[in-house]
Amino acid sequence: MKMVRLEKQKLDNFIRELSAEYSVYAAGVVGGKTKFIPVESADEIDLTHPVTDMSPKGVFFPPSEVLFEYDKDPSTSFVLLRLFVLFEATGSKLEVIESDSSKITFGILLSDA
Image (cartoon, rainbow, N blue to C red; front, side, top):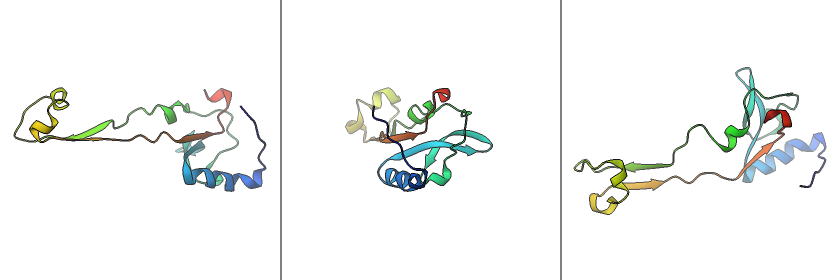
């Protein structure tokens, strides 16, 4: 891994350029607690946090997420597991939700893990 020093006055421009292409997460204060939140500018980042109140693993492994959605034809009464096999026959519709895997986490400390 290559380490690069970034001057503080260039941080805002750096974060804005990253957030144009990626979802950028950094430590920020929400409701009195410091946790990793989505940011679009350096003004939203808390650079003074010694330890976050919530682990950054929530950025990579959210506590809940939508994996898929489906519409079921009201004239059928098949269970959800059978819908995977019978989509075309019953007229049900399945929509796969694409996950956003292009995330950057800025400022993780060893104590945050």
